[in-house]
Amino acid sequence: MVPTNYYLILSAILFGLGIVAFVFKRNIITLFMAIELMLNAVNLAFVAFSQSLGKLDGEVFVLFVIIVAAAEAAVGLGIIILTARNRRSLNVERVDLLKL
Amino acid sequence: MTGPIFIFLVLAAVAIAGAVSLILYRHPIHSALSLIVVMIALAGLYLLMGAEFVAAVQLIVYGGAIMVLFIFVIMLLNAGEEERTNFSTLATYGGVPLAFAIAGLIAAALSRAGTEALPAAAQGGAVSSTRSLSMLLFSEFVYPFELTSFLILVAILGAIVLAQREN
Image 1 (cartoon, rainbow over the protein chains, first blue to last red):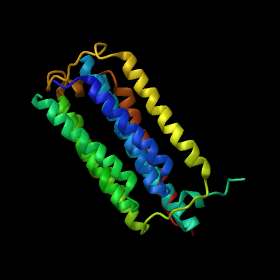
Image 2 (image 1 turned 90 degrees about the vertical axis):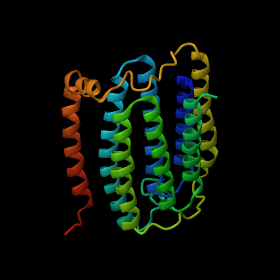
Image 3 (image 1 turned 60 degrees about the vertical axis):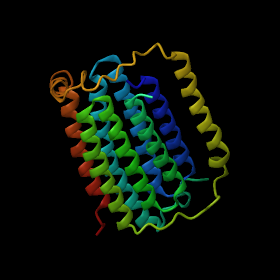
Image 4 (image 1 turned 180 degrees about the vertical axis):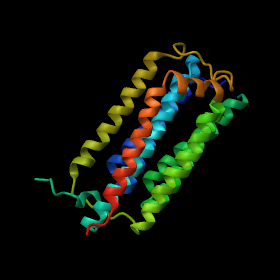
């Protein structure tokens, strides 16, 4: 059987890569995908803990995370469409109305 | 090396490669396809852990619905390659230390927990059956579950209001 720590390490690596993608990418859609990547990494940790502790609560949480991610994607992509329409660009650095 | 560990290592390598290529590709559609690879690898890992229902939901909802939504928006907006800009030096100089700090924090927490702290269960299908999962979901977690349907409704309304063309 695979030790639980392996899953946790993989989850941490994926989460870190998600952070790197979020910081370094410039396209607003790719930033959203980085958030999804981080959510997936956390889901992996949830399922690993759930299996390790022999309780199913973690898997229920994963279902909730997926539901919230779906809702977030729907609203977020709506905002992205609106932003792209108003700013004529998908680059996040060109969305700087609130910048001093 | 036993079978499950070999499968785990292959799937983990696929997932990490997908995540890295998400960062390296400059075109959003390539990043989206890389993310789908990551999600499919994670679904395989869930199957390996014996969480069949979560694996199926991962494939259908994440790999199917959400990513189709992403690709649909990418094509709708006709997103090209992202341009290289250097408006923000804060992201460059603050981002790398931040990423390393969080990675170090997680590594420290993992190493402090030790390998013996967690029982290396991952019993194939012994813990999670879809039946017991749904029993839990519809008894103990029934109120959060109903609340999520309300959340989805609000999200649909929000998406419609946001995306509609004015006048």
